[in-house]
Amino acid sequence: MKRTREQALDHWASGTPRLPLVLRGARQVGKSWLVRDWGRRRFGAVVEVNFERRPDLGSAFEDPDPARTLRVLAAALGRPLPPDGSTLLFLDEVQAAPRAVAALRWFAEEMPALPVVAAGSLLDVLLDAPPGSMPVGRVTYLHLEPMGYHEFAEAVGAGDLVAWLREEVHARSLAAGSAVPEPLHRRAGALLRDWLLVGGMPAAVEAWRQRRDLPEVVSLHRDLLASLRDDFGKYAGRTPLARLSTLLDAVPRQLGRPFRYADADRGERAAALRAALDLLCGARVCHRVPCTAARGVPLGAEVRSRVFKCLFLDVGLSSTSLGLDLLDAADAGGIGDLHRGGTAEQAVGQLLRLHFPPNAAPESFFWRRDRRGAEAEVDFVIARGSRVLPVEVKAGAAGSLRSLHAFVAERGLDLAVRVQDAPPEIREVRTAGPGQERRFRLLSVPPYLVEEIPRLVEALR
Image (cartoon, helix red, strand yellow):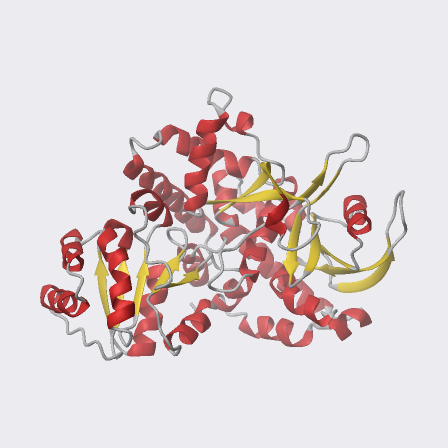
């Protein structure tokens, strides 16, 4: 299966200087497979050190001389490890060998020709790495998320459709009102429904690609959720396992609304639950979406840290966690027929995380006004350059855009985005409601085009 991050890996491999690369992402999103598959094609040979399988190899990195470290590894593994750039050194599950993490600086300084990639559980790194062990300034990062809609479509044989959407949907076709012909819109919508059910975890996508068997996918989802819980055992004594498990269940239940610790467990203190959620977010099992005033960029400068929503790791996993019957959901018409819109926000939020550069940690925000009698909320607020862009998710049929109009009027914006189950279009509208009337352009896109929002917005400047 092709991953879009291969382009970023190619850029890193040909860059100068080529710092060791740390691949970041949740468990089971395909980090190890990506490095092995891409590394063999790019360099011809990959020497892999998995520190969970071979914890004894961590001692090889106690020596600050990387040349001696390579000789020890080559002898222990029975594999040549030339430092001339012809072989990729892959340090997997590197959180189990903190000294190897710290040693990356020596490879950067003394063996710049040797390509080195390190990967592992972000939660393990967060908990186990000693303070200051990460060689700041001597490594570079690449962030990997679950497979998005476009990657999913290409994996199941619809690469032609993805290419068409990228090439033919543009500002002129949107303005003409004929951006996507009805047959292609139906095909793209059917693939979107499949992605909503299967999600973007590579194991589930591969099973679906081969057999199109939803019960098998559900079984894989359950195994993946169980593997996340099994990881909790490594943190015994740091935070109670039951508390982590409670949060893992609570996040899917609260999709689409501000997260409340009391709704997760009324018997636990909010501070204790907050610490547990911090760990899950550090591992990218969950993602906080804080409330921002959104008066300008950066959006994170004006957040209300105690008011936030949460996204789950993956839309397929969240549905299985909720116990939704995917066989029944397979007959649903679109995002609006699943979980009263919670799945809609999960899906769109998950796709919006793919907008960020490969070496930038994805961020998400939403906007809320709590003034009595004038409450309003916009599902997501993103930044494109210096532009603040509201994104409203309309599950099912188009509904009121009162909150979106209020936000546009208050912030003096000229462009907003609506995501809904309808063909894409752009049109000029006027803000509704009390206050100063303002004209703005409303870009409406179906969920299968969420990944194209940056390109479409750039063309609308």
